[in-house]
Amino acid sequence: PIKLAARMGAVQPSPTIAITRLANEMRRAGRDVIGLSQGEPDFDTPEHIRQAAARAIEAGQTRYTDVDGTPELKAAIVAKFARENGLSYDVAQISVGTGGKQVLYNALFATLDEGDEVIIPAPYWVSYPDMVRLAGGVPVTVACPEGDDFLLTADALRAAITPRTRWLILNSPSNPTGAGYTAAALRALADVLLEAPQVMVMTDDMYEHIRYDGFDFATIAAVEPRLAERTLTCNGVSKAYAMTGWRIGYAGGPAPLIKAMATLQSQSTTNPSSVSQAAAVAALTGPLDFLAERNAVFQTRRDLCLAAFNAIDGLSCRKPDGAFYLFPSCAGMIGRKRPDGQVIATDADFATWLLEDGGVAVVPGSAFGLAPYFRISFATSTERLEEACRRIAASCAKLA
Ligand code: PLP
Image (cartoon, rainbow, N blue to C red; front, side, top):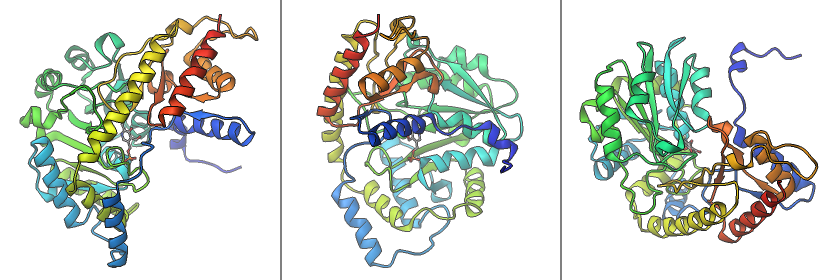
């Protein structure tokens, strides 16, 4: 048998990937499965960005670049932070990695010692706790109930901070809930953080541009400039620009941290794809008008699914401020029975039922640290979403 490292005991494959795999198996067996488990826009990368990549290939931009980003891309990121977020970084404070994921990973690996604590508001993006464990840290999850709009409160933050706390991770708008922090909500958290100088803040602003009903995006380093020197503001092109496959993420933060992240990256993956970096320059310096159009489509889909779920006896759903996920409660389904007599005891049982009976793949809330809920991504075609809602309603109606 192959002997694996002890650290592998600390991680699981991403549960969203596990559901997708099961759905794919059912598809291969001939079932029509609607996948609502993957967080990926169904739109194409905009034309001007694809063209920039093609030009980069033809111009020979196919070699190693500076490890943590080309000067052109770093300049575009500096300008983006200034223009859209009111943050002033210089190029030595910018890091570019292979997706937002690598940037977060580098930051945690560069800073965590064995036993260091990282505060993670739950529900959380599935990768945070595992990344923290891999880096030798201890994830400290803090429940953020629906009654608080799934947001971390100042009191809950204060209660979670210890002398060992190294990071607070803030993701807004959130995957999986779509909940967003207003500037006022961030202000309240900043006041607590100002009293706890040992705590750094990692913001995951990946869904900044995907927002609804005039939700006003804010990021904590801009809300409280005194926190900027211990905040890593993370973002990326994957979601806003429909560039998930290009693998470009970036961050702005304190220069010594940025430098350490580059050292780590130089001993793992080296630079992100040169062609993708050229594409990201076009994304960050180009027009943003396609966003309003796409957000309008996302909003229509959000409202369609919200109405459908809230009409089902046993489900209820809060309206998200951004991102492209719904996180409905299935508390009313717990304890009901399937036609074969099996009891729905957990949200995982409920998700299994929706997949087996209705052929709809969703992710149980327990995967994100809050049960009983489930997450759907509405970044899929309107027709498929309508069909999925019909199937979910039909499968729910079979539970007694
Ligand atoms: N952060 C959040 C909250 C996400 O949902 C995702 C992608 O699903 C990422 C980070 C990772 O983004 P990337 O694909 O750029 O690595």
